[in-house]
Amino acid sequence: MSEHLPGSIFDRIVESLKAYYGEGWTEDRVANRNFALGAQSTFNEAESVHLIGDPEFEQGQIHFNLWIDTQMEDVLAADELAYALFAELADDIFVCTRQIEERGVRYRFITGNGKDGHLGSIHFTGPNARDFVNMHRMRGGRGVAYNA
Image 1: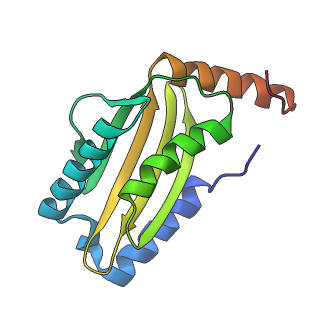
Image 2 (image 1 turned 180 degrees about the horizontal axis):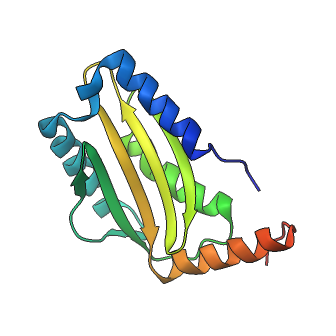
């Protein structure tokens, strides 16, 4: 199983980027709306994912909930799908971390350039994402890495 970037380290990276570029770097409403529109277009064109509802804007962050149509057998498959989407969305700066949650997989991200930044998450949800979480926990609980 691959190691992920701990949430506390991700938070420190975000703090460092905001300190360097300014506290408002990720809070430009127009830039965030434009980013969200571009992301929606990317999600609409992507295979195996569907955007659930509108993006959620919360305290300078943008959150996307995506329904996953295909099974994800392991962490590599989940990451592959996420990074295929991020390949379309990421700008000059890009940092991401994976969090396995009760109802799916969340990829927290920060991306941007010297002018503006975007902070938020992509949350994989739906039955296939929940099945992945359950399988991931069973594998991790036994301390055995295997593919079924």
